[in-house]
Amino acid sequence: MSDLYDQIVDNRGKMRDWMDKIPGLRGYMDKGDRRTADRMLRDYIAGELEKRLARFSGIEKQILKSGGLSMMSSTREAKEKFQTYISKVKAAAPGYSGLFAKINVDEEAMDRIYAFDEAQVRYMAQFDEALDTLENAAGSGEGLEGAIQGFYNLAQEAMQAFALREDVLTNINKELGQG
Image (cartoon, rainbow, N blue to C red; front, side, top):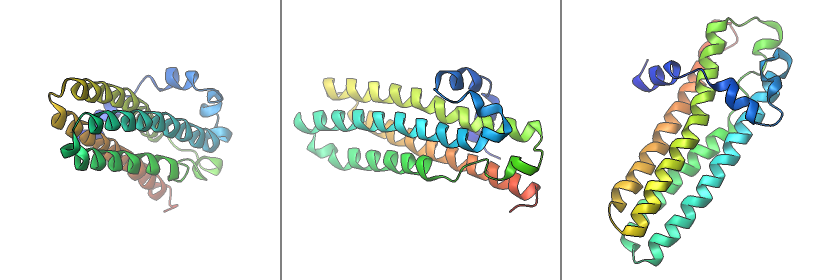
């Protein structure tokens, strides 16, 4: 499908460890709880991403206060891209609505969905790294444009990964005759 898709599917495996750290998500594996768990997982991810957005806003203020007005357009674009990603995560329809109540979905399809859920969790760590880079660049005044662009690119990639997750769910619906 794409390099990003292959990367996400190939890096699956630690989802259960992460899910155990999120309060209330143990029922994720139970068929009856999948819809609720999917919503809880995305709410958790969106909440964590909003914390990173707040951190970005603080760094953005630091950049502007230290004379980086020429960067205002770049920081605004990166922030808007990140906010759009967060909004997509928040607003997406539950991935398991109706799929598992009456129809048995094979293990491979479930693995694909879990891989994309896991990827969204991994993006939080990548955003932390990008914010560290941006904060260091803002403090030193060196590499600022590249750090802002790197954050923007990461937000774009995360949005693409989330869109691929939606595509996986849509294809599962089609395979099951529900789409």
